[in-house]
Image 1 (cartoon, rainbow, N blue to C red):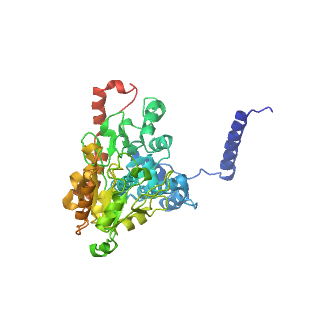
Image 2: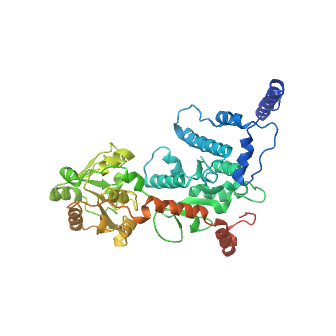
Image 3: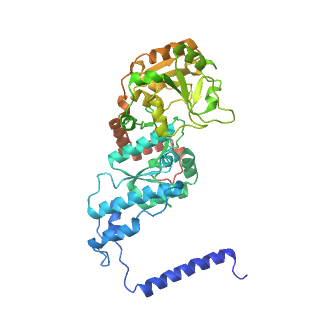
Length: 449
């Protein structure tokens, strides 16, 4: 063999270039026209000069050219790649159309790049708390008119930033991806040598449980729950989806007398942190004449929990089936985990009370924010851990009367939209400069802000 493997690759490349050159010059003797809108796409980056290219397409031909370039492929919308391609192609097509027609929405030329897995999982209709939060952020972006695209990894996110430049207001990435980006800052972040890289003051990480550590500090960590001002609080809203669903009357639900047990995993019932006696549901079912139901992932056990009927066939329910079950019960009870969850908010929005056990020796509760911002007045009933009598009395109190549907003020759709707008319009550059002044040792000197 004269040519090695690498040389064969180059031969293929040069052969392809040669064939392309031949096709252009022998089958297309005129200069190939391109849409003038391509030049106007540079307006996204603040360049408003119109193309003076004499070979640009006429306005009449542009729509056809755009259709040819940005049409959504006729391939099944399945799999991670295809699930991302469809919305990404559509958002760029919409952008090109609005630039061509000079009718873009106020924020349409501003982008958020979403690398975080939780956002990509929304495309598959996953229903974890993280996905519910991500979906709420996407809905706020839609309400505000911002464009957003999905990225499979940081290299892909970097491609979007290199293409769109400063039109990208934020890149939302998972913690490990951010760490890898900083470790490879010369190719990932904007530097003197890499002027098309990601601006590090526009790189944010979502932390559902507020545990993520950001190089620039807590203000670059996005969190879902209200609170401490050290982080960037986005929160979420369950108002749209909750209020769209009808809830059976208290009278109808009282005939079934069912109570939902909130647990995603079977081990929640066997952990040392389980806040009740092991036979609590058997006892409570007899004393209160109720049926406990739930759905959880079964690991290496038979999945049986005394006193609770499993509805999930070895797994959790789909979002639709979960909502159907939730609106039909008299109450929802927590088992100590997960710590914080959208479900208590969702249940009180349905007018379904939530029994909230304390955890960690009473230092907190399973859902401290629901306890703080909703309270018993609107359906959050707190129970001291390991006090079975209190559990039964509080549950009896919770199911003894109907509750009005309630959305906490900070979880309305408007409140959520206002916070997302505040995040995307804040002066992250100046905030980052202050961090650099105080902690110059954290960053390599060649990183630009």
